[in-house]
Length: 176
Image (cartoon, rainbow, N blue to C red; front, side, top):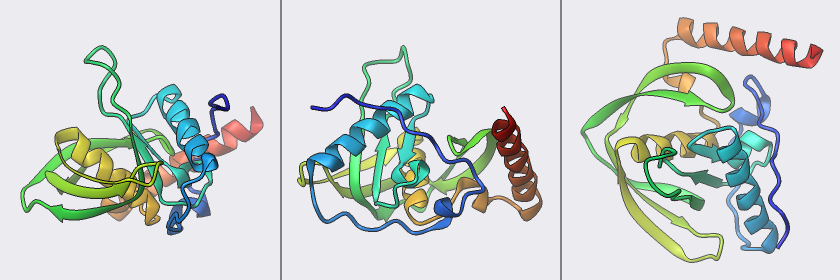
């Protein structure tokens, strides 16, 4: 088994974050390695979810773990080709952030519960129902696979303000 390695996280605006990711059709050791690297990157960031497009890989793969440090053992989930099969009419509002939009948060309304079907890195089909933070996180990450960011749910002015902050951050990092 190769050692896990951290990957660079793309910062918005980046055209790769707006593209639809491709379905995964082969369950290879490389896919398992990619999932491991993504978990390592997510935990290091630190974050609770990461989609492959955020590290520049346009494939339908997400990782998530909404167990906060000190609240229990890590509970990482790796989802290949995840799909929301059902969503509740009831909604919930969470203050969302994104590793590709660092230090920016905004309230987003989403279905309170979702049922998701996906494949593990071993190719086994799985499904589960998620609520609370897990429901928000899995929807946020699946959005990434469709080229959608949490700021796309915001009013244009707020979205533009955040985008300008990210452009400034990228310029500052480029100079550093």
